[in-house]
Length: 297
Ligand code: RIB
Image 1: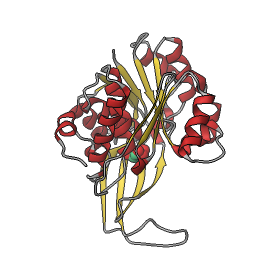
Image 2: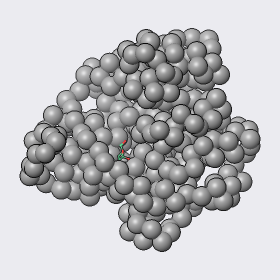
Image 3: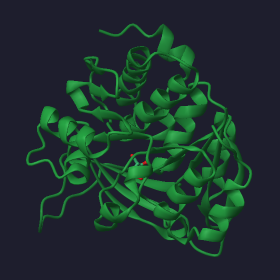
Image 4: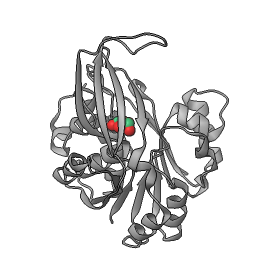
């Protein structure tokens, strides 16, 4: 069983600041670093480091060589990444001393993925294979429809939230990995309180496995047979960027290996705790050996 991660690749411009900039305020950054990121790239790296056989598809510009190198070094098949005549996507990330972040993304090449590219890529995958999507590329709705028609299992991390999200064929999604706000948007729950969101999501999408990530409160899981919870590990926060992507990739990789959902949640939780302890997105994603050997409380 293979997994295709069809998603974004971003050059992350990370500005280290004392606090997240307020409206109308000008502040100086102590440091600026270029790193590799994008939800698609991060989740692909997490899948590979967790031991899945993963291919990534997406678009970069001539400035995207390091993004492709990062994938290859992590063991991701990058043959479906196309270089096009458009700058790569990028993210402007404020990283505060508290470890909190604030992100602006510019889609660039990520928003130039066409239905034809999706058709060609998906022709290499078959029934039973997984596709993993997020919401940083063009034609996500088309990809969901075509993948499902091929008998693939559709995993969707609906991040970031957008207006168009509500018009996607979400009833075709097999696995959602999402946070409370995303869950509230998709389900129409009246509050962002986790129990209310999970109940509304499971009612709206009875066909789906739902994994609700709750940051320092851990994660919740629902499928037609069970409801589970998993606490988060208590770790010093250096940078939360990419921690959710780490959780998502690890959870799916463990699921594809046939692990029970509770075990998959626990492994994903350990992996994201380690990612939080290191600066950067893709670079902070641990290997499975690191996840298994770490002493975490
Ligand atoms: O989820 C973290 C990612 O969001 C960053 O790497 C950034 O590129 C944005 O896509």
